Image 1 (cartoon, rainbow, N blue to C red):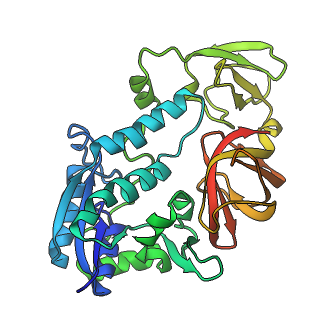
Image 2 (image 1 turned 60 degrees about the horizontal axis):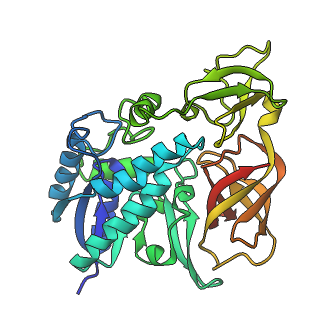
Length: 360
């Protein structure tokens, strides 16, 4: 019997071509779109969002052309808990979240898997630009960077466990975006020139501040604006409006450019300073997930990315007794931000990663 693969189909060109490639590889294929938002939000038909009614119909049309079964799976509860509520609460605590990592870990490769394995599925395939391989040296599954460095998404996959990686497929890992669009056009898929979704999928109007103000209505998150010396320079109406390195919208005038250099989650003080104060030599990372090995037992040289588009920086990783990792950069890095993921690499291999807790 053919092994069964469920393809997560968002209605975009990447997941559509992923489905086509899986079928060409000879698998027993099922297409599935995840309904992640409440129905009233799914009415948005912008081509740069996902989970709209238009996206569902686009995915359905691709499934019809490929002649594969197609289903819509409601994961609203999981998406709200693990992605939307997490996103809101992190900002409320003065941290800057990464909802894409949470969505991959908790929704696509956890909530989805719990359901599709009941259908006899062996794998889940997604349209991520990355590769997954079983490394013969470490005897473990690892994520590797995509061939198209401009589209590489290995950063947002660091949280996948060994079990999750064992049933993950990323067929686009060896393709460029242009090749994917050409393949879609050859197959006659109407989504071949559909724009990529942008920004945060559950904020279709891209008004993050408006979304947060509504979600956090009734909570007092205001505080003082101070400098490093503790001098009060002003006040703000909510820590969720700011992130490390931010320059715009501070509402103070020091006679020179000012930047957010620290957000104190206990006092809700917003600390501002000069640009050079945004650079940090090290940070502590918590909730570590290792892919290349089970744990870090001694200091190791590696590279690290502190956000999705960050150029990898040389680091030394030091294990801490509490399971956290102290990350020391060879050169100070700009805007190392609590709440963001720090992902460790050896060349094109993801060693693992964690969440930035504190910055020094």
